[in-house]
Image (cartoon, rainbow, N blue to C red; front, side):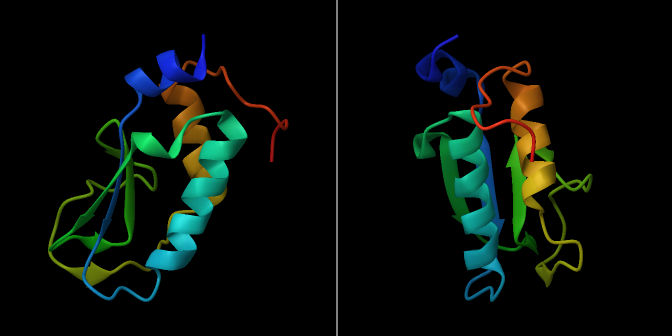
Length: 102
């Protein structure tokens, strides 16, 4: 499966509230995870609104196990690189990781 084919099957949403202090670290973790599994940044849509913040959803599923919906609030369970990688690998069928497990 090529990166383009995998990217067509994976939709990632990075949700946050305006001025979220944890958005930049979550974005860094997300970008690193995408690079590790060989997916382009173009699979990511960033959305600002009334969400638990920051939240990363892969194909509509919150990587930390929450619903991804709810009122605007700072999350205590910040998305981890490990959870993001696991969700991305599951979405692409376990293919595409380049640098081995992390």
